[in-house]
Length: 109
Image (tube, rainbow, N blue to C red; front, side):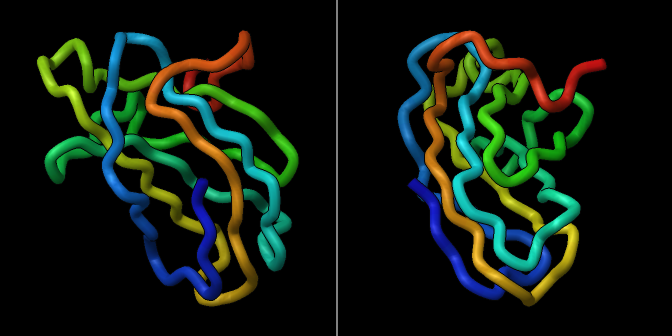
């Protein structure tokens, strides 16, 4: 779960174990003050490992994020959340380092 009020430029979740090469799952439950969605990225050991740098997810969406954490031999990651409108509202949701379900990717064409 992630939850934060008045996020500035970017908010990082705590690290979690990455068990396989599947995409990272995100369910963006609440995004008050964020009508344009937020940028989501997957980080490991201080490096952004997200395909195409980030993806946009909107309130109520469940998406996967393509990233290369496991393929690069890393076994932990955290989520970076960057609201498109800074310092306003609340972001809240659920995430898993590995895929849950067959949701579309937010950062692939």
